Image (cartoon, rainbow, N blue to C red; front, top):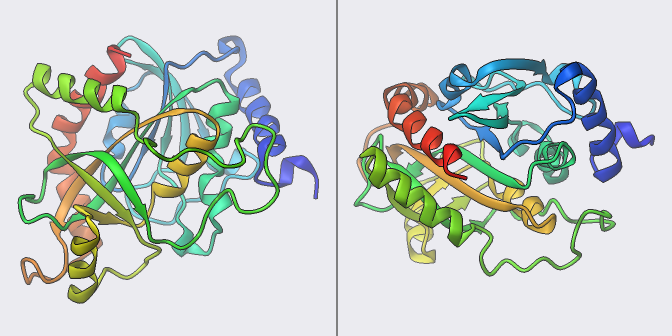
Length: 280
């Protein structure tokens, strides 16, 4: 397998070179952060100024996104007056991809110069204190996907046994809280549980997750955070609580609800993230 066709560090460097060629006079890239936009949160991409958009189909190793609300573009531009890279959408393991493939875009962002990673996702609320539309700062996570993107030969960019004592940067968590105060955007905080999906959880599974200490549950993000930790990137993230998890409200769950709640929260999310990026 050639380096450009894999999903490791060598392939990421080759893919980054291809992205730089698309940016032309803008290269070299020096982003203050890279942003991953999850389900229902893609509207922030439209707020990036002077954008250059590279479809995933044109980046070696990237895959098309097949989930509503995921545009499938890598974007370079400015947000809050700072240079950023953004991924408008992600692939998920439930689409048939391995953990290394799901996390591979983070390797490309790192190869493009990003050392801070901000991720976002839609999640079901397990904590009964949460309501649909809440924004939760991720303080920690549970990897219940039973997959690890570091499995296999160690990559030259990675630490073999990365410390996961604080995968979600305390510095960036504190900055997000300060930005929430500055903008007046209410935030929650808690633990995100990543499950494989694609089905939503049963009420019994939600009770189990609550016992394990999870405040919200989703089907992404964890592989990205693990790879970022192995590459010594600082990571921060927000979960949009789109619904009460199964068995809490009794209401049926749907992806249409995820997209609708994301649209309603778009302005608050954009205000918070823009302030965060401007203060990095």
